[in-house]
Amino acid sequence: MTGITATQQEKVFAALDGFRIEVPSWGFSNTGTRFGKFIQPSAATSIEEKFADAGEVNRLTGVAPTVALHVLWDLPHGTADVPEIKRLETKYGVKAGSINPNLFQNQEYKFGSIANPDPEVRKSALEHLLDSVEIAKALGSRDISIWDSDGSNYPGTQSIRRRIEWTGEALATMHAALSPEQRMLVEYKPFEPAFYHTDIADWGMALALAHKAGPQAKVLVDTGHHYLGQNIEQIVAWLLHLGALGGFHFNDRKYSDDDLTIGSIDPYQVFRIFHELLGDTAGASDVAFMVDQSHNLKGKMEAVVQTVMTAQEIYARAALVDNELLAGLQAKCDLVAAEEHYRGCFWTDVRPIAREWRESRKLASDPLAELRSNGYVEETARARASKNAGSVASYA
Image (tube, rainbow, N blue to C red; front, top):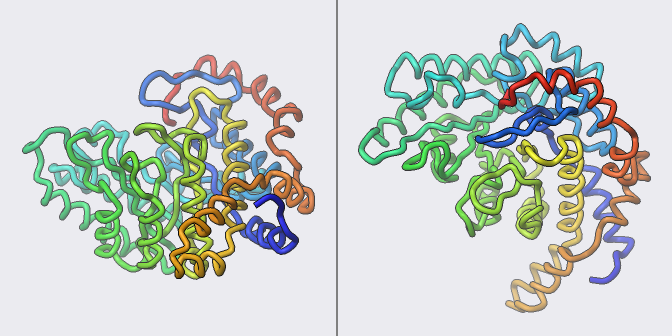
């Protein structure tokens, strides 16, 4: 595929018009790894600064109108913090998006949260989940995203089956508290921080727990949370087929961590995922796209803008696929022609058409270049440097 036709341009423009991706509040602060965290002078040090950064990302790209919030880090006083969040929404032009409970940071969670053998710890963790639902209601946020890090490190030290029961009971109770328009998104991860068994280790476990919880529970796919070589687009296809896909946390990884920029290691994988979504518009119309990255070395703002642009560009490539043509080639088992059409779309340079789309929508033609030249990072570094210099980097 050497050039883009007028029909293809129309398809790409339509796809980009409908593309939205949520940015994470924690992606703007001094976070990054489980080990040393390197302080950046321009990193956000408060919830207002996180909203300011998210607002700037949306102003530049036009496709990131919501910011994911972590309850413990961003709303430490629960619903009492909601008026301040609403003020920041109005001031910076971005809305609160998914609400993310924290089931991994408290000292009492050493042996688990909702699957802790201690019933008092399980009760405390469940109360936190229910508080998160109330926060989401007060903010008008649809999705509550649950990453449950519970598990065990050594064989025989925990009852896997009892923990399945406890996890299911907690999620079912949380589901019962949802308002009709809310959703509960259940995330999975094969390992880390639990290294022998994780209570929600793969999409099948997440799906089973979602089904047990109720119809407003869906599965959340984090692209970094898979074994090496796992066919993520097949998982996506299955979840779409079952009507069980709720959303994505986009990132990338070479081995097992998951904080690398989307598409930096395997952009073809992201293309394949987007193809499944664009090829099944009925099932994919309500799937939430969210970024889950926290950069330790890249500049925070640059990394987020680069991420959003990369996601847009790969989405545009997937929109080039002629699904009717491809289906015909697949039916005839014309393997080479089918793959060449598919690969040809992936290899098409869509950056010029993405620039045209941005210009036609009165956005910066190159948001990353605009960020690097408009002085925003330098200005925030001057304003925040002293606060960051005296801070201790953490996930908060």
